[in-house]
View 1 (tube, rainbow, N blue to C red):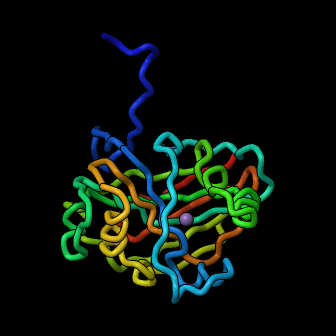
View 2: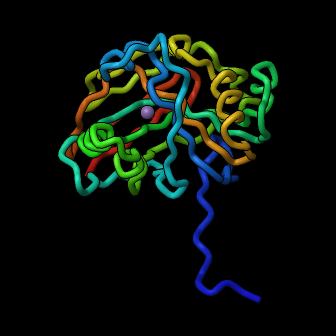
Length: 228
Ligand code: MN
């Protein structure tokens, strides 16, 4: 018995300092996880539990490849984010046990067709086409936690063409990484290979073809991506 068509390729991330790849199962993203970003999007950060959306695993852009400016938008926004990769899973994971599931960390971009997302919000429709489009998730090589240690306090920033656009620190997350993992595991069963984009700080804005995006989290490999 075989497959009726050639099976799709396994999505995978380069690992810093290794020839091995980290295979990706699902890509979860947290919405509005920094207070100042929630406010800039017109929401009260004090009253919201975390909420989640997804991107397809094959939306990841790796290896420093260019990101093509996507179709169907004239308002493509950058969202720099800390990404957590899981080596373990389960349901209803306690906050105190959540860090044990982390395999490593990477710098990622949750690229967003803000006009498409805005229309979806207005109409009460799903965000998928605003968030989960092709090549919407550029990501740098992943670093194993065995080398970085637990990362809880680190500067996170994004430059566009050499100018700082977003800057914050992971200690400004509304829902910490273990709290996020725990909460998400109450909604879906997590598994090895899952990624979680943990939310973006304030300063999101539009970018255009030709822009060079340079993302950073202390202790990790920087993300460099050109929009073409
Ligand atoms: Mn985001």
